Image (cartoon, rainbow, N blue to C red; front, side, top):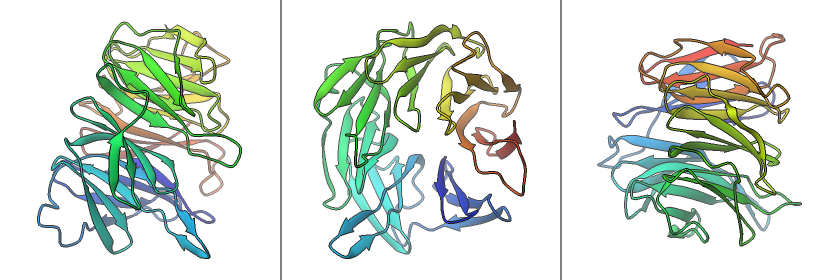
Length: 299
């Protein structure tokens, strides 16, 4: 599940299903649901494992729209831009995708390899600094004018690396189980990591020093989704235990809010919507579950 923010009140949520269908929900206006086509691809019913919003690029005076990237079980990453569909071949199915910058993605494959994907040239290469262990999660900050992009990779051995401008920093707080999710705060200063035991750590993304370690342990099963609010202090988590918790970095000893039994079978995606919808003063949380339901809740 990914969120796309447009002009004004336009807030769209993209979700995908095991049967290969992609849906767009306009939650900023009237909650309309639209099915997104993958064109006339013969294998377009292949299961979707992951997705990411692509940042647009500038070529001379021409602005290239961003679009949507879909990692499918048929060893392909589909690029959807309006009614145009292209397909990039992978050596294995992509199970995680994240945007690194204009027309650039980082992906994690089922064989534990992390790759850089150039959408414009449709080229794929192993991501530098990620080798040597089996990756189990990946995230990225988007390149801006004043900062280089950073990539975070979680591994089966419980470690997390941050790769930025060729340098590698390993987080000091090591998980006791495999890392199942990583997520940068929107400003890129903090990195949250969750593991198969349901524990969440927060670390300084520059130094790797722990900020919150070993204390956020309300979940009883693997963390499947992490999302930061724009304040850089509030984190929302979802797990296979079906629960959703809200945490704050300045209140490190427990969750500040919870939505229990949110999705029977487990939470598989979550996003924070800071924009106030219809005058509501609370922050919206959108979650998706193995029950094939997308839910809105407010905190």
